[in-house]
Length: 320
Image (tube, rainbow, N blue to C red):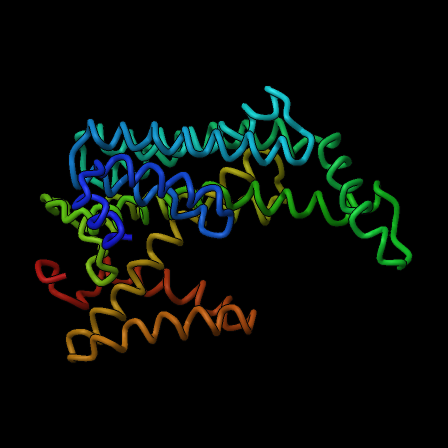
């Protein structure tokens, strides 16, 4: 992405234009939509707040046009539907914009913005896919799509109960943690590409996985989140409490997992094995995808390794 933006700049095209258009195209592509905030953060880091805000507007324009064209081709071109498809990217772009406006350290503002967005998205998800009517509609669509296969299928109510509802529950339980990861990654990668100064807190702004060190003040909130999850699991709690517990505990596990991966990367690079770090990450991803047991083991061991650095000095903090 960086060479594309650099070439655009040489042709006298403002960075905010190319970054905004690229962001909108990322979102419209579907499969790389999770990276659509990175070009916008690049514009913030490269040219400042004004250009970053302009890139947000350019991205929204491209996304709006793309959504309108897609809905028109499907025959759902209604203003209310267009607004619903426009709202998620708008909120996420506002989130990355807020990160650049808040004058606090990276960890605090990424977590604060993630919490606010999680609350808004939680309300929107509960009001949409969380309702039985929408789940029934989704089940009907699935039934229509599979109806031409010729196999005997259950009715829409059964599909909604046995398949759609559990899938919605999984989404509600992990969307907050995914929001945190998306914002943190976009913030870090965008700043790294824009060659922004690291500042005093530095860890997220450097963009290097080996440099990630979770602040000590996050330990007790993390323990509280995991304790709340245990209460939910053993008490068979459901509803809003369960959603908060799952999202908070997964977010806490994710940032300590990143620190655990950073420790492994630091070990390899301290031994002069710089290329081994990338190969190790690729191998871990492949093993997680191919074997559920390996995925579960990694999901447990990486956060544990990250948390253990609170007490055990695996690396020199200044050089991390």
